[in-house]
Amino acid sequence: MMALTATYLFLLGAVVGSFLNVCIHRLPRAESVVRPRSNCPSCGKTITVFHNIPLLSYLFLRGRCGACGWRIPARYPLVEFTTAVLFAGGYLRFMADPRFAVFLPFVAICVALFVIDAEHQLLPDLLTLPGCAIGLLLSPWNPLVGPGGALLGAFVGASLSAGLILVYWWVRKRQGMGWGDVKMLAMIGAFLGWDFTLLTIVLGSFLGIAWWGLQEMRGKGRGLQHVLPFGSFLALGSIACLLFGQPILIWYRSLLLGSVAGGLAVLP
Ligand SMILES: [Zn+2]
Image (cartoon, rainbow, N blue to C red):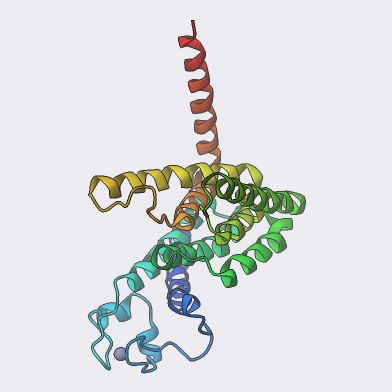
């Protein structure tokens, strides 16, 4: 029974991932995600239902558009596969816990935001603002927050990141994060509450610094001017928080306490 449900959620995730691919392609270009039906971004030919089957159609078409031979980017099957794995994995993690119902829409939006920010350094309002609304609407059934906690989380996420932008602007006379990050953090706050939102910012910053370091080591970096897709790292951090937030929070607190204790120990 468990394996059957996990398989079903894997397939559901692949279908959702297929729709996310449409959003990822069209939202940054300000195109409708509903009309026209799925078509090839290169020749514009409508892809038949058979070709709309996620994952399998990519294998069947051997990664090329049936009409014009356009090479379908690996991102398409990757997004479908990742969403499928997250849906099935989330079920195995949460089972009948109500957190699972909150997890599904959140993860779907985060996958789309991750790719769009990585490709375009953009977090579309059409994802973050409805995401924020969904987080608030689901909050009565969300054991992580509740309605008050969701509002507080959204407020903390938005005001903290807006504050960081203003301080950075004041000190460096240019913009650090974007306003898209502010709306995304409001959404994360509405879903996860204020404590996991702070943890998400910490995790996202660690990931961003690690990524920046890797780019520098490979000689591809552009110093601190390098544009980091911070939204992508926030997406990763928030999904990690939702899946393993409690253990991460306990580990992080012990790390902080450990470093404070260590700092006190070396004081004369
Ligand atoms: Zn084509």
